Image (cartoon, rainbow, N blue to C red; front, side, top):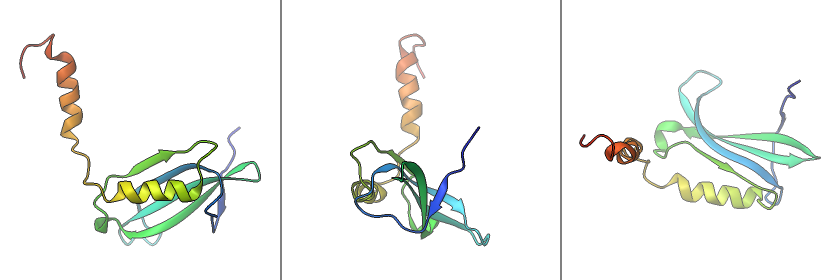
Length: 111
């Protein structure tokens, strides 16, 4: 049986952090897409989710990101990583197709 994830209205910088994601989602009032930071912390031996609205998604050009934590990661360290990633230029998705081409280039000589 699946368990529901508990929610919280705050996280502490030194709490163990299991996962941090920044994704673009429809805002609850249906007034456009916003960027949300979703943080899963371990609290009282349970995963608890914190959601922070970061504003309109059009104001953040970076790709959505998911950072998986481990037993040693804290909220502060994961947020720091996300801050660094957020301002990187978006990933060129055509590079993924180029990876596939390199793999099969030896078999199919050409394009």
